[in-house]
Picture 1 (cartoon, rainbow, N blue to C red):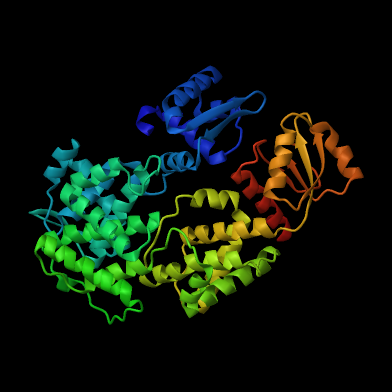
Picture 2 (picture 1 turned 30 degrees about the vertical axis):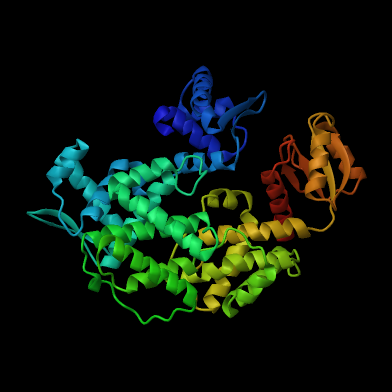
Length: 503
């Protein structure tokens, strides 16, 4: 996607996606140091190149340019592509590939000359890249060892695999297009080129067999984690890496069914590759299985019955504490209890086994639901500390926040709402209908234009103003939305109310 755009066009896209509101042509012109005519031409070219991906730059007279998306998948894609600049590998695909080569070859050395020829750069550039990679490896307690035979990564086997999985996961998430499937064809082809097509196909078939035994579909982020773990495992055992390097801890399986499935997976891999595998590998797969979540929950009583004592306690405490922090009573919401518990139970297993999942919507959740996210993070980490559980990651907090957000929308008390549109007419009726549909207990006290608002609020009791146009500063909570009043607009309204409750 980015390969088709100029550096200036990429900078424009990043700016618009990050701000999520209308930006004037003048502001964009100043940002990229180009004329307004050039900016307009860039916008036309961006739309020509990205419209097939469901990404558009829309213009509105008097307001400027805004990034719009055909659906959530298109927005996720654009954020993955344009907003990933947070680590060393995002600035250079070459670094990612060199690190991957070294890990794939370990414990065999790789010469600087080989890397120089492969990537068509000087030996000095390779040496500079290796310094950056060494800094990254230190996070996994790994190091680079250099001698006359070449450069190789040294460290224990468990750390080696964690680093490999980190690179594979990065490749999967940063190169996803529309996220219509758990791992798309292009990424599978890329992984096949690196790990071998037969190993990739065997891994996908193996997980399909696992799902058949579980009798449910493994949710996407957990599927990707399990896929990556098994693929790396197969690669390392085919190198005949000494299993004794992996420490065996005392282990008691709490879920015998899951452990039997884990053992059967190891048995299938042993038969496929004609090799004996340490049973510790079954324990690792077991950890991934009990840390995965079902796609849906059909029976709420079953979920509560199957929830462990600690997951029930954690969920109840979380609801109570968040309710107190946001001043919205969601403690009697049975659906929230059920949906949260379905996430908390495997989440606690993930925290125990140090398994991380990626939340592709985390950036949006933080932006759109900042107050709720902060309250959930405060509550969850407080409970985790009291129960001697490791800190809850932001990715997990994001998933918990979505559950809480849905409950808040269902439990916010009756409000008196004033709608403000450009003329007070036209699309106002559409907005009226959608607001009532989202918040059926609310009362729309009026629909006015921007010029009428100051007089109106002095004569009427108004709790919140929902507006499709920018307003002068006013002594009421104001939420800016589109006339279509999308799911994101509903989140903005909820976030505004929660932020006011917390003041």
